Length: 190
Image (cartoon, rainbow, N blue to C red):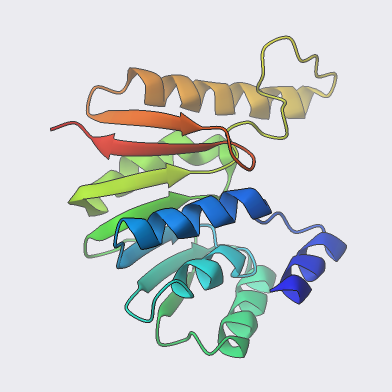
């Protein structure tokens, strides 16, 4: 896995922080998660880590960048996980996914998190969870942080709006975990 982390770093490809992926894989193991839908494959790092928890785990992952999709395909094959991971090339907002999942993992375009959540919550099993990554966004979502770049400021505002959306969502109860780059775990209210 070290070479995959190095590849991501050398090629400026965002992958989940080490503490975050360790937390997520532990959660998957402890909660007997078997089916996962991932929004945002990048180079397959998270999917490979999640699939490696158990041979019983099946993952559907969506990536819209063709270069990253092709890299993810190669990496999934290197780990011999093509029977567990089904990767789809496409825009997650335009892709239709059938079936229900124990866990939906959102780790794609931060500005689209609310749309991803709303679109895919119907694919969640009754007791399933939605996990969102990057909610601290390298500490930039914390109060009092001054951001001079306009585009970055807009992105941070959208992440803050997503956090507020989760906090105020009456259909789901969300727990915010200060691990990695900030993770949220959303469960349907009973």
